[in-house]
Image (cartoon, rainbow, N blue to C red; front, side, top):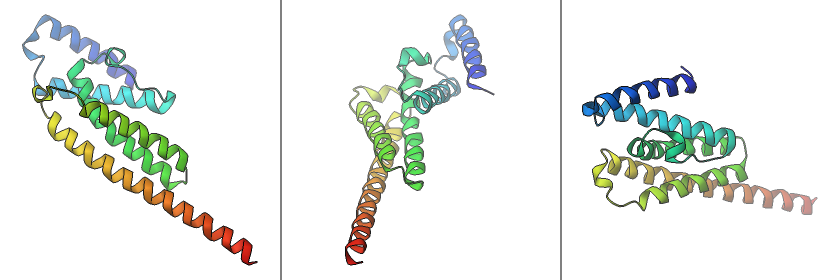
Length: 156
């Protein structure tokens, strides 16, 4: 299934929910919209380095926020992939995006009304801290490697 297919399905589900709203807050409905939001935000970020707004995603505010929390994990994966291939500047930029999304979500009030938000924010916090450590370690390693190469040149 492509994102376009998912968007068409989400639109059909939304139309059905508008007719019978008793299922709007069902867990499986929220999760479906959340996964869609995460996928749409991720695709936009990877293809255009753009973070979509809730309105641009069109999944509703609660699934959008939960999708952003899951997106933090995707940003960690991207950062780690960039570090693996030596793209330190790109990894730093991705980490800064990750940290920004997390801090924005952390600043929200009244999140207790959103199911699983507190658990997801705790997971996101751990991911941000772990990624910060990985990026710092790689910066230090690269700096040390550069210093060793410079010393080798001077010794020769």
